[in-house]
Image (cartoon, rainbow, N blue to C red; front, side):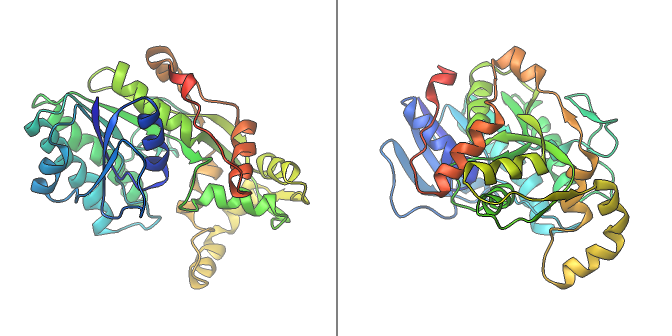
Length: 329
């Protein structure tokens, strides 16, 4: 089957491409940048999600389009991020409808749900990110879903997936969570920040997207979660796997929350965004994410977190990590 993937050169895109080609699909990989080499079964094309003509051309002949493009930022306001995450979704969806794509699988985010007002648990019925005080990424991911639903109402068959914190191999982009774990695996993290969050293996997210394309119901959201992970425990596990010194202790979340008014401006002055309300929000609120719907309707089953950490450390140490294709056969 011929499929298309927007944002194909990114962290999730890299893993999704491997999964799709292993399943025998012919893939049109769409991105503004492309690798210098290409695997069999993949045709790279340059595309702009804000250009309708570009998207119509890129999606010609595809039966399914997996929309991965998003601009991730911790800023409160960013006009480009807003356009890419909202208008970009609508333009891809309209192009898919116009050229006859059979189904669109949109990759939204857990951040489309308001983690601060969810009552400690996030499922598909949880409050959405409409609060104007939330970061632009959170608000734009929810608005992107609204834009998609407008096109669904015109006849597009589309489903929406909301991954939690994505980590694991293969990662050529040095994502925030992976870098944190790799630093710990090298003994470079003497103290950790307390709290935890639901983390999901990038390969399981790719699996969930494929399953949503095959079995998802039109217009439905599916949370693609993994397991709630305590950050001190998982960084200690990374250090243990790699034979290095573990973080000694974690600073309690309540202490961090109390100090943020002081730490945030200092962090920004030093050119870092690691100690801001936007970056710490998920850890401090620590919601439990339910993925029962994805498990029941799609057959989605994420792997144990220890397996992900072991494979991630192996990847950074230069050992080959294979895609688990049998899990979605």
